Image (tube, rainbow, N blue to C red; front, side, top):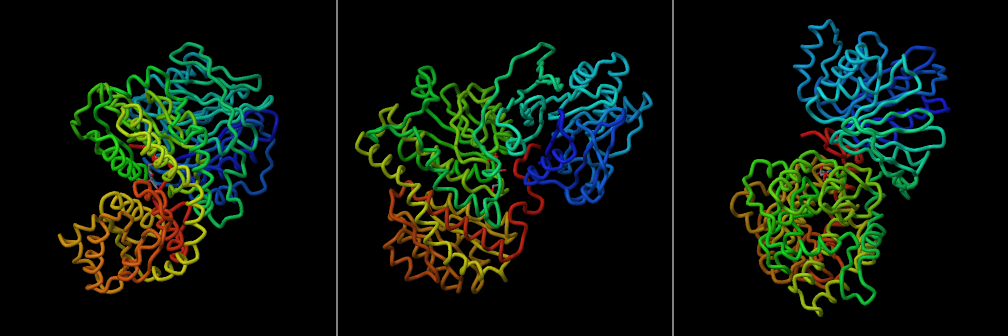
Length: 612
Ligand code: AGP
């Protein structure tokens, strides 16, 4: 999605703005622009394409400006080109605005403003903002109030930053359902959509809340909400720029695949009691515990990879808690009359915590009285803050569009939550709990083993994917959930059309698509389902498919019927998805490398889909 950057202070703004846009490139964009203030006027430079194209336009321009804003745009209204790129200006070219989100009533606002004589130059919804602010600015002469009144007229959601040629010692910003963070420096302030763009300058982050409007001057930050001054805490984050950079890997995705043992360790840290008997969630006070103890049904709601984590979570919850459990795609959840009661636990899973569909689904659950528990990877993100409680994954910044370490740590949190609820509800014996927790505690080391043992073999296998535009993933039970995630990973970064099917469904249609040598990945980690999986693999073999089996060490019967077999370490089978998914991530990665796609920023995709 779009990225905002802003600076006000004593340093030259231009290099800071460009670096900040580069640090947010992974969010996905198709045009970029910068506006700085110098010698009484606004300098505006915008370009279709990448930041490198913008830099070509800037050329060797000399700038002494110490105030500026910048933006990378992922087109929603209006094609990606120079005129639709942000920042956008008012008629007098004295106001510059950058914006993330959607102004839903922009056509009505645009027609009112046009009737008042405003002239528009773009097809964007955003351009109504500078003209609307100009209207109020001309009436009242105060930038902060003008922005406040403009936000009152707007329907939709936004993160925006505004600078004025007539008030060059101020940067005004506002947020509603779109992230915006102020980096607190020493006599200087930074603004960005994502902390990764700020950590090289400061670790002190003021994370704006919904409805906040911040007035930033070199002297400090004042935040207002509904016209009243409010205090916002300063979050101190421990990410450094390196952890948000590639660390010597070819792509962020490969780095993040290899970070998973560490990410699992970080996520498990402090949450397993010393005697290994129970899960500890400091996040849950007595009131929350009391509420959770009374839960009698569970919804897991998310999008994409997070949804696939929810599918795995459902298996664990049903098996151990014996509670009615549903996993729902967030965008579809809006269209369901789901039965939600005050005894419903709605588990809202989101790496970014900013996925618009998931935010709406969470709010729907809250309106219907459910207890909403978020599983997020980004501190103080919208979902993390609005949910009734949040359990963070501590995977560190996930930059690649394809989610890997976030998924794996989401599984870890889902397993821990299931074990926690099992003890709270008296549904899991102490002995079983101890065994499950011990198996989970082993995951960082087993993940390390899996990645290091399989990576080179998987690279060899991926070479065989070069000619292919189709691939299939099959599994039964909890393995069918892993198959879905494997298919998404492969398709979203290699552009191979990959589909996941419950193995039992093959004969009901899909097997018509099985042609000689087509790659089929068969997940076979559940011992009670192995014989059925073997039969399905034989069906595939009869059509000469190239079957790649993923199974636990010692399962020679699977190897006997597969072209290639990828072995994962033995573990409690309920937890096998954590390990089984790792080879699928690596397969997707190396297939994309072989296909020479844009691995970290695949076409048409964005890291955080903050539009509906
Ligand atoms: C996963 O690889 C994709 N990038 C995408 O499906 C993603 O999982 C989905 O958009 C949900 O994002 P979230 O976890 O940040 O809510």
